[in-house]
Image (cartoon, rainbow, N blue to C red; front, side):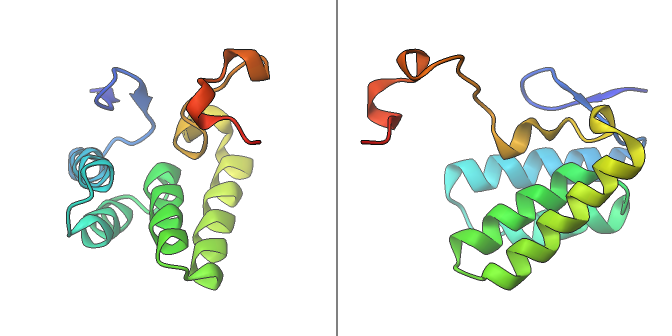
Length: 112
């Protein structure tokens, strides 16, 4: 069974537990609720070859200014992508929105 994220994008895991924990972890992260780190760690434990929870966990580490841990998780995610291919990661998590030019980017998100 193919797993999808909340937006219908394919997830590269065969594990029901990993897909469910990843979706829950992202929901918690976006909502600003507690338990994000633990939930993403559950997804990583359920499928160590699933890159998306690794990069999401790296973002949580970065948020808490844990730079070394963030770099380690991000490097592990990049390693998986290099080993299994970009499709295996659906690495949209690292940059969920991609604009073709600065003009496409909403004004409030533009760097000055």
